[in-house]
Length: 161
Image (cartoon, rainbow, N blue to C red; front, side, top):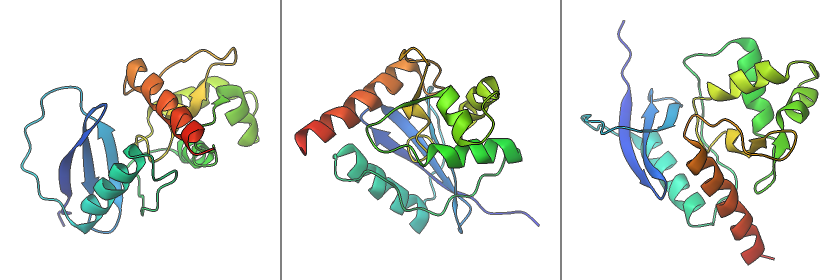
């Protein structure tokens, strides 16, 4: 049985993104680094994700309320992605801290690898994980986007104090 997917391109301030749904949950939100030609067929979930991303980029949303279902990922990766959702808006933690939060403090490299496979850019905020010395490290969407997202969240928090 073939499963139907729905998708749409989303124009964000940091470039195009693709939102994909299976009709029951969002299965991917990712940055698009090349010109992607697709036939868009968004469903209500794609539109809901787009709306919530609009709110995020307007500085009005700090967390997302979307049904997510990864079409991939090991048990460890899924645990890493769940840990990402506990990082508060505008804050950062190190990969080591994330590993500790997962009760696996020696798994720092594995955590980095898992974060790199996160299928839900921005919604599951892997951009909030940085190096132990405070430097920006690794982001599959590109370091410029990671820096932009962290600066954006910080500026939103400052405006609302």
